[in-house]
Amino acid sequence: QLQLVESGGGLVQSGGSLTLSCAASGFTLDSYAIGWFRQAPGKEREGLLCIANNGAITKYDDSVKFTISRDNAKNTVYLQMNSLKPDDTAVYFCAADPWGEAPCAVVRQSYKYWGQGTQVTVSA
View 1 (spheres, one colour):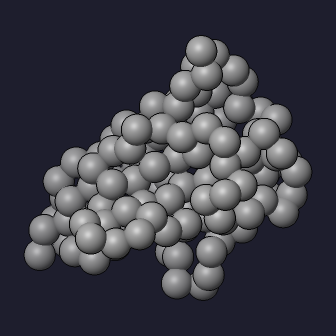
View 2 (tube, rainbow, N blue to C red):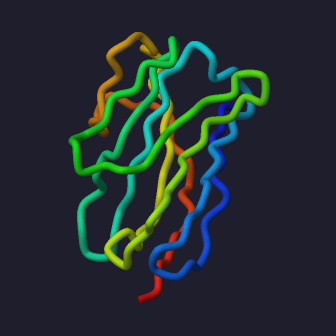
């Protein structure tokens, strides 16, 4: 069974940092593009950035300050978030696109497999 599991969320103060992990089971991530998305209360799910199977990174736009990396040996992709603000409070999701070639697309429709999400709460 193909599965993605996010972890690393939690409560952090404004200005703090978190590293989210996206671990795959039932398949290997190395051929997939992996994207990170988030959904704040009352808002639509929005794309942040993605990493193609060759390591090329695409950001949704220049406002995205987070970084993404992948460790194929651990079958895991990471989202490093620094200087967090209350507006970053959301459920964060990772997703896998079987078409893993660069450039990856930071749009929901491109992704076939989704994790359940991890809550990130940033206090003022």
